[in-house]
Length: 170
Image: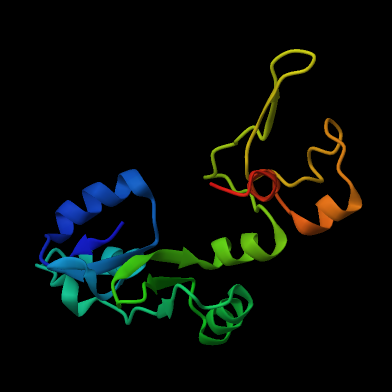
């Protein structure tokens, strides 16, 4: 969630207590005009000075990537440039979202849990033959309750992929 560049530091601090993010994209006029990143540690270091803070003076350069950038390349770029997140741009240069290093790592190696993550139950048994299964679950994770051929396991990593592949439509 980005922040407008014209907001007061006190207002931002109050809101940030709720979200607990360490880096915030800052925009001017629209979220498609990201002007920089506000690192909360920079804001906190200046709040204690009891003087008016101009947020634009605290901004660091934002790192932008195309939404079509392969994840392995994005990982290398983030690592090489020591960035923890990137602003993702769509084909027209508008802001499509943001991606964190944690998102990239999870895309490469699977889910990484930390103390802020909400625990999501991937498989919930309703009765002897009925289950509710999270579509992002891997087929291997549910192989105790479902049988898949080697070809199905090779062709589909997730329940979602398996269902879409077999229905041939969204």
